[in-house]
Image 1 (cartoon, rainbow, N blue to C red):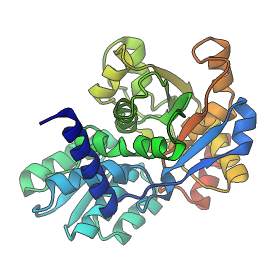
Image 2: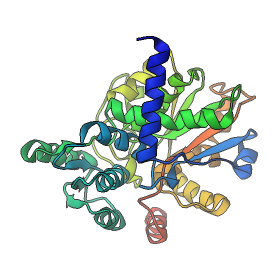
Image 3: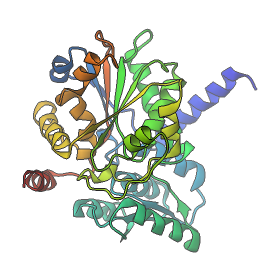
Image 4: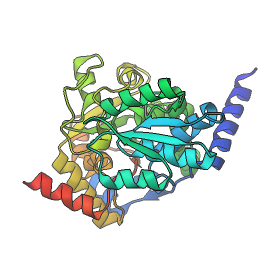
Length: 338
């Protein structure tokens, strides 16, 4: 089969997938953020997905491929992956069991139940919940839905870059892509998407919060490492070990991946500023990426020569906000100020 046919079949598969589960989300220019960095900033509004985050792209695709005849799906999640799995399972008419760590906000647990999922609260952090999900998959014959570490997930997430390319039109591409990193699924999907559309020269800026920085720790160590604990309040970034594929992207010569850290306070301030300026509420995990703009990281990277002074349009992946409401925002603000 020729290369053209392969690409055509892949494109048709992505189109079919999109028609069933995820939306082609808006790509919005933001004047206020553009003024801060001195170049056009585009927001890919993944928070407008039906499940509240980008996760529906990959998880919807994976479930279509693996769970059509399943007796049920099981997923470990601090929020967004579970919401995507529960939404997809409901649409497919398949039972869903979502295992969440005790650190998950009550509003997440309730939203999962509203989607019809059975919720089990296990352990302190995501890794504990994941061990239970794997056990349930084996003992009860359920289809395991990984939240970030699977090629089908990355293939699904890559569709957002294809959409951006279609929206920008021929001859226009970003100067950089700004993402939050938890377990690395979004990073892998963006990297795959950049390869798919021929944008491998576009750098990825990978943002994490201190205390949920498994990717940054791996980059610094030169190998995949496991954090002792998750101490950040950005619980949806709370994987103690990044997926190996994300680490491999950081080491390869084909792509440029810049790893940076922000504090919880910077991420929370970014959430508040984004709410004020863009009228959209997102969670702290998303705030980690937004803080790169609001806390001056983009300017610093330009001053250090890691990004060009004349930077092309900055693409910000607004990854989602299903794990926050005004009550949770007030709670986080109080906790981080004391």
